[in-house]
Amino acid sequence: MNTFLEKINTLLIDYAPKVMMAIAILIVGLFLIRIVLNIVKKIMNKRGVEETLQKFLTNLLGWTLKILLFVAVAAKLGIETTSFAAIIGAAGLAIGLALQGSLSNFAGGALIMIFKPFKIGDVIEAQGITGKVKEIQIFTTHLNTPNNRLVIIPNGSLSNGNITNFTAEGKLRVDLTFGVGYDSDIKETKNVFLDVLSKNPKILKDPAPMIKLNELADSSINFIVRPWVKTEDYWDVYFDTIEQTKEALDIAGIEIPYPHAVEIQKES
Image (cartoon, rainbow, N blue to C red; front, side, top):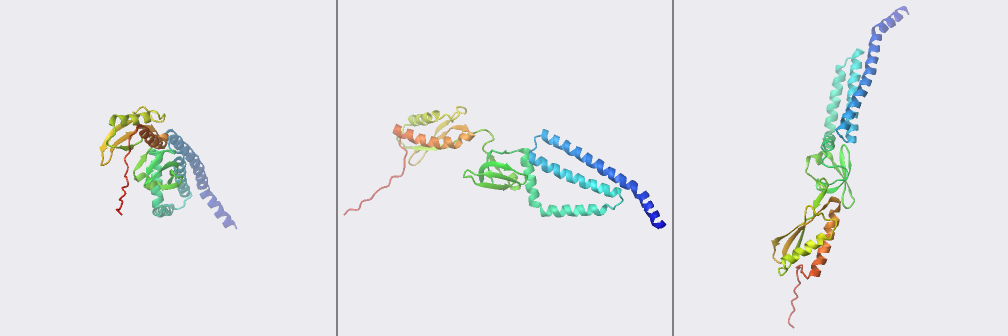
């Protein structure tokens, strides 16, 4: 019994300081990790980093620092840390190989959130899809197409491909082409186009609309009509201009050529 008690006393004397020091390292380490994470959050807030990316990066940093703290505490207790490092390294390699696609999407999401080629509410074309950006997540971006379909695009392929942002500049040019008959008066026809555009309040005065004779085709002379509009007015102006121009040309007696069916009557 005495021998057993002596061994316990020896263990307490030998390990008590180590345990106390390990506990102190743990407490101080957790406190410092909290301070570091708060500083990182403030820096990211000042730089306008997306909230989703902030949470992901702070969580990743927090777990990394806690793992390092755990290894430091284990080393202070006299536990061999070489095996820990090997296990962590092997686990990291295995996870990295298993999640290659996910890591690529994460990197793409981080790039999108940092460089901001588009934001929520923008209309973009990417990966052959055109739609309004509904949500930007860390791994995927969600688009609503004009026919209200939800399309989910992985951020890896999205960030590595071409992106057309229709909303970024705040205004768009509507490109239309109208063909009229060869016997039409060019100046009169241009005045009809100009009158239609001037009556539409959604068409911008600056830049001024472009109306030019563009082509002498086989059966028509073709004019390009290119008004500028705010992004949100694009489709309204597009369809209204086609309809109103057709009506105005009819009133002015200017023909829009079309194929005529030729009937061949057989002699009886």
